[in-house]
Amino acid sequence: MTRPVSWPAVRAIVTGAAGFIGSHVADALVARGDEVTAIDDLSTGRRERVHDAVRLVTADIRDTEALGSAFAGAEPEVVFHLAAQADVRVSVERPAHDAEVNVIGTIGVLEAARGCGAKVVFSSTGGAIYGECERPAMEDDGLRPISPYGTSKLAGEHYLAAWNRLHGTEHVSLRYGNVYGPRQDPHGEAGVVAIFFGRLAEGQPATIFGTGRQTRDYVYVSDVVAGTLAAAGHEPGVFNVGTGRETSVLELYDVARHVSGVDLEPEFAEERLGELARSFLDTKRATAELGFTASVDLEEGLARTWRAVAEGDARAASN
Image 1 (cartoon, rainbow, N blue to C red):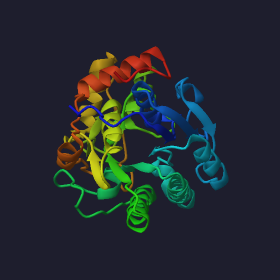
Image 2: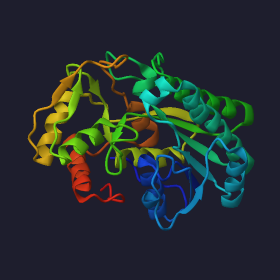
Image 3: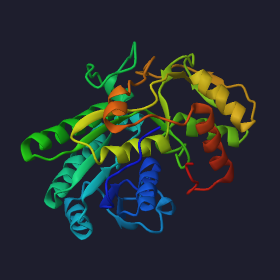
């Protein structure tokens, strides 16, 4: 279980706070008593996900003028940067757009934060950066992104590290596993759990691409939030945030069927180009330095997610 966050109440900005992970981070900050400002262009996020206590600024992170104005008004001490182009398929089809949002947008956030003297906690990615894994991927392993999305996230990490060296900032990068939970859109970020439950809720079988033996590190959103908040009080670095366990797509679908009570056999389709066979994360560094340990097992996390899907509640709680 992750150690409780011990740093005092702060003024915080959450970019992408109308999205899946960002809305949960903003909720956790509100629960701590922090003063929270959300920045989201609502292109994929939904206004109803934003907590009533959060001030929402509708702006694109590529708009430096709007970004600067939002930061000046909020005077943040900590910035949780979760706004991103997060769809791998979109990154392949529109690599320039992916780079504009994930690289140029991140530079804009870094510069706006520098103007306020704020610390940035950056949401990066594990699987899309490490490439194929024969064992749990460690932070110092070789980095072999195979998609523009993974490449743009890695570039963002390098910009944070460069700002730390150049400007003496203390930004932190977090490499998330495959995050799932309530509020994930089956038609947006394309998380496999959301897609499976979206199909099962409609009484339709889900499609599994390839054999289904490919593995991922599925981590529940409340655990990711705990790790993200813990990083705000830490020195600069890069940390994996996952479970350290690999689960195949076939195993995932079996548990999804079990918790939903919708017992439909999956359909199979041709394997997608560039898909990894194995991807999971070593989290020893995050445990040692952040006090982070994922506490929600897969069956419990999927059961919570299914309840939120069945209730149709856009602001369903993560715990």
